[in-house]
Image (cartoon, rainbow over the protein chains, first blue to last red):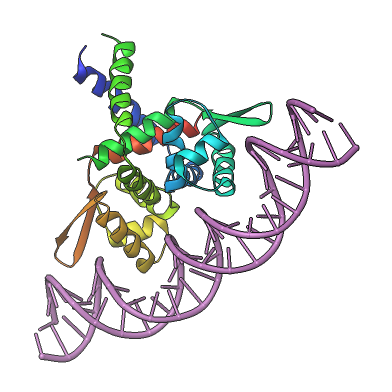
Length: 113
Length: 113
DNA sequence: TAAATATATGATAATATATTCATATGAACG
DNA sequence: CGTTCATATGAATATATTATCATATATTTA
């Protein structure tokens, strides 16, 4: 089974998923994508691809002030796209799961065409 | 080569993509996801999964007024997520490519967990 | 070519969102 | 226990976005 088999498998899964969307799920979906639809948040996510980081590091990487970053971290956290744990005085953030990766990758693929 | 091979292949591709993101692409990415991040637009996209439709049909399906729908169709068109062609008096819209499918499917997967 | 139908568009008003500033909370440490 | 460092949060402002309303454009047909 090569790449074609892989794609077939995916398409079947995708069709199944999409055939069963209801209005509520569509709203949730819009909410999810809204989270990705802000450059500060997506830069934070991209930053976390390098590995877990604390708030100060993220602020430095993005060259943004701490409050703005914390506000967006909160939104990402509530949306369950990132996890956090405390280590002494600092909070350490990391990506929540592989879907974030995949969603972003699909987006990049679309853009790069 | 089974599902695992498929996943491996995807992960390698994804890592490659993400490793090469620059600031400009991140902004474009945010712009792209912003398009998906509106329930009217995502309902239009979901509607078009059933096949191509004209504006009147989309309005009926979404139970929304024509102007609101046309405004969002325009945004989707400019973003190249949908195509259009004229057929007499009516404009017929359709999904532009499979990435739309894939991006939405990834979103659904994330939500359904 | 005037009327009818389908769609697009500009302006506006209503709403949502992000950033900033000031301040609060929480942990470590003298 | 008061100070310092790291982060979170509330309020306010600035900006963006959406839907609506009115109207314009384009196509067909009488």
